[in-house]
Structures are given as C-alpha cells and as structure tokens.
Length: 308
Length: 285
Image (cartoon, rainbow over all chains, first blue to last red; front, side, top):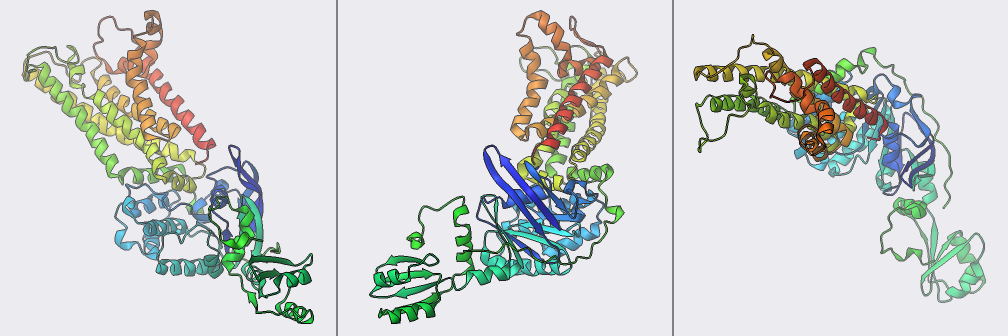
C-alpha cells in the first residue's frame, strides 16, 4: 500500500506536484495517468526517496521508503528506462543491485529469464535497445520480490508482444496480493490493464476512480443532431443543463439530453431532423476532456473540438 | 464531465514479513561496489594504466638518469634531481592524473549514466554507497599502487646501480616511507576524485577541479608575495604529499614534517568526502 498525503514538490518557482492525496491499494493494478509533465514521475521518485517532498508525506506499507530495512524487497521500481551504467552488463548490474541486500545469484538468473534477457545478459547495457532497457529495468524492479511494484511508463519502447507480456505480468503481480502502481499517458493502455485510476494534471489530483466508473461516465456523452432548422432547435432545447455546440451549419452537438428526448421535442415543435446519433466518446477522448485544462504542453494545432 | 471521487475498496493483502537476512548492511554495499568496480572494463584498464605509468616512467627515468639512454641533444639533467628514490618514482606524477580521473569516474560515471538512481533506490540511506565506493577504491588502489611503486623502485635502482651511479636500497632512511607514501598519495588523490565527482556530478568539472587543486594551485601560488607562498604553500595537497614521499628534499624548500604532511593531506580528503556526504544526503538524486 502506498499512502500519499498532501504531497507537494517545488522546483524553483514551478510547483511540479501540488497537494496530492491518494492511496494505492494492494491486490489490484492502479494506473497513474496524466499528460506529459503532470508530475507522475516526480511523484514516483518521491515514493522511493530519490526526491524529497517540499511538503507533505509519502509512505509505503506504513513507513518512509528509506526506513525499510530491505528497501528493494518492499518496493521494486522502474523509474527511467536507463538507470543503468552503460558500460556494465545486464547480469553484473543485477548482481550488484542484488548484493546490496544479500539476494542470491540464483534469483538474478531467475529474473533474467523472467524478462527474457538471457541471450544478452552478458552484453553491455549501453548497447541495449529501448525495449531491452525496459526489460532490464523491470528485472531490477522484480529482483527483491517486492510487495509494491512501481513502474513508470513500462510499455514505452516495447513491441506488441512485450506490451502484452507487461499487461499479463502486472495482473499476475496484483493477483498475488501485491500493490501495483503503473504510470502511463495512454488511457487506452490503462483501460486494458488497470482496475483503478489516479489521474493528475499540473501536479493536482483530477480523479481517483475505478476504471469501470470512468468508462461508464465516458460513454453516451453527446448527441449529434443535423437539422435544416438548427437555429430553432437550438433555441428550443437551450437550458442551463444542456450545452449545445455547433461546428458547421445545420449540425449541433448536444450534451445533457437523451436522443429520444431531443427527437420527441423536435417532433412536437415541427422541426425536421436529418440525423440524430448518440456519440460514444472513446476513453482517450474522455481522458483528454478530463485533463484538458491541465495539459502542460499544448500542441499549436488542435481539432475543431473547441468551437463551442 | 463529472467524475466521482470514490476510493477503491481496499483488498486484503497477504503481508509477507521481510526476511531478516535481506537487510541492507555496509558490508553488503561494499560487496555491491566491488562487483560494480570489477565489472567495468574501463575501471580495470585505467587501474592497469596507472600501474604501467608508475613502473614504465620510473624505469625510463632511471635509465635516463644513469646515462643508459640520453636525450638526442645530450642536454638537460635527469628529472627528479639526484635523489635515486625520487628518480625511480617519477611515474607517480602521471599516475596521479590517471588514478585521480578513475576516482572521479567512480561517482560521476553513476550520475552521467543514471546508474545513481538505481544505486540510491537500493540503498536509500545513501551514505553507505559513498563509503562503499571509497572503501573498495582505496583498498584496490593502495594494493595495486604499492606493488607498482615497489617494482618501480627496485627496477629503477637495479638500472642505476648497474650503471654505476648513486642508487638507494629499501633499508635506507625514508625509502620505505616514500614507496608506501607514493601509494598513499595515489589512493588519496583518487579519493579526492571520488568526493569531487559526487560533489560536482560531472566528469569534466570534477577532473579539472581535482587537477586544479593538485597540480595548478602550487604554480599559481608562486605568483603571490613570497610570504604568502611560504605560509600557505606547505598546506596545499601537492606539497603535503611531497613531505612524506620525498627522501632528499630540494635545497630551500619549505616542507612540513612527514607526519604533519600526511595529516594535512588526510584533512583535504576528509573535508572533501564530508562535503560530498552532506550533499549526497541532502540533494535530490
């Protein structure tokens, strides 16, 4: 279990993490979502004591990470793809990590096989591809058979087979009762892997929800209506709870009303409808909607979605 | 869009106790640092290069001093004056550069590659990592460099006496001290490098700072009024090192006694390592 309490981190005049409060529970995979620069990596670094909080507190299974007698047995973390000396082989890297806490050579061999690095284990890690580097990072994280597994963007650089492998690995780790906390900026990936979501943006907590709830709230979002009398229809339906956007003549995006309701009211008012279709927002869209105001780096060209 | 802020129901986890045999200890961190040290090809090569510099330049310098080989124009005296011990240990100066750089890379290399994050995540108390590096480095360097200085001395004296010029033997006053002192010199300069690498977290910055302190500072001091030079000079690392590695001091040099010089040199190392320890503990990795 990871407990984050009122956690803040300031770099210069930039507040990277702003009063975060959440708990990551054992037994399930918890996704940690947010746009680039939202503060995910900083939060994870604070969990394992690499950065110290400006204020607030974070504990793992009740204690600060540094106070655990066998830290890598408590928490296994993959923080960056390459936190490895480029001149050292994967095997020797793992052996050196294992030695700090008396983990056997046999366990080193085990994790090398587990992540599928057997053939390149004696090669310099500097020559590894991004995907091989990720696998080595995951091997390091699992070395101490930890109760809490923290992985920062583990699927980065992995091929589809590797992505599937990670997904199954995370689920089986959670199934063994471990706490699994995985960051990503890809909602779709998290929807497939995680059961619970912590969403942050600009260092602040945006949502702490189960994936099921998130999916439910994301679907059936708006209704697209095409009508030659769009202006009249807009006046007819306008209400405080209803938002109506129009990106082209004769086309309305209506949020807050059921399709049946719109059709019935249009009929009573004698307004012709040429299209009436419920729009299923994808999870990705729902996520973007949720974090819209919290995106750190906006692209200069955006779609016409903000024409409301 | 509204999102309910509801926490997931906690799932009961089987809480496995930490096996007591998996505690992080200083001895285990030393072992880990030893694995790191021996598993980098660059470390092994650099250490060997240091030993070759001590032995090779020592023998070359002895051959030069004995007249066995001469410079093309026949001019110039032998380096190291006419102290036979000093002549055979002439390679130590170059080895200082090599071993000093190795020390720097022990720590700066972890920062430049990102390895430091793995190291500090495994040992979150942090200081055992710095001490582990210092212990492994000092142990290996002292043993290898002592062997190198001994070989350089014995080989150099054999060349000198073979040519019939003045030579020294191990039993002569100050000779053993100079040989062991030279190994200590190299070990200490490397430890200063470890500290500077951890302080500056940059290889280039730490190497230039180290050589600035050890090699360039004494020269700069010459530019100051001579009373300053006389008061400060003996406390510089290079001059402190000279006090316990020199058998026959050059005339007119102001040097500390061997014991005081060793203490001053040790103080430089301790202060730099302490600074590195404080910042390592305090800074974000």
